[in-house]
Length: 314
Image (tube, rainbow, N blue to C red; front, top):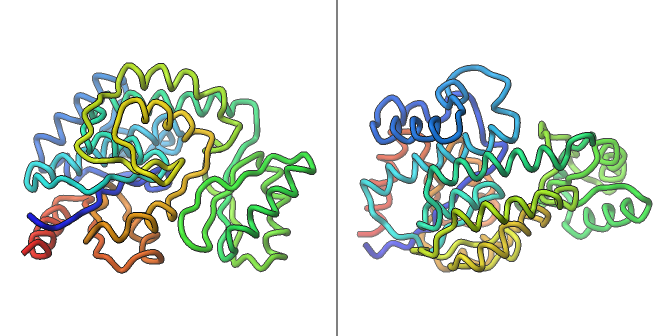
């Protein structure tokens, strides 16, 4: 098939009770992957994913839940349409799902890995009232300058997710983020809103997590990339274990360059396929590209994506 696709994977914030249930109800592959993840981690994923609970919002459970659903969606797609992507790109946590899709991580190893990643992030933030906040409607440079001024005054706030034009997520100490709100609004932000996050991702507050994560990555990563993964840290592709070992620990403490990644590689693809719940990246991509974007989140959308991609490739 001549169609050139990029595979995309969402991160934290895309979770919801019930995600992946349609796959689980109708696919033996999905059932087996859930059972394998249960066995490996000791987490009851059927309860975590399909029943109301208070664990899904805790990062050590959020991360493996999202990755597992994304990996199932990709596995089912791959079984029906063995299409090699031009590249794979994930938003934050989604970079680990992307590594699964290109063969550099085993799916169940990755579930265990991001469960550890979530625990390490929670431990790094323990004892600090941390948070994350989204700013809408301001240029990157304005938000960066405001954060810089606040840090020089002793506050802990960093721009950490460059998601789309005019949309930046800021991480840090919650009281410092709250103090930033009137300054953002004075600068004409359309909105400045605290997010429901239990950690402060992609900022220096997570430095203590990088070492233990590096050790586990060294055990689990494989030098078997079928396509490049776009690094959140550099907005450039990498395709070796050595590069991944250098970049993924840095990802914990560096901003996510998502919109920069789409801008850099949009010309190289005909369409995007997003694997996992919510279609969050489709929403972000509306501001960045006119290319078709398919979301594989249940059995119906799986079949629809396969049919539409086949038409594009004719």
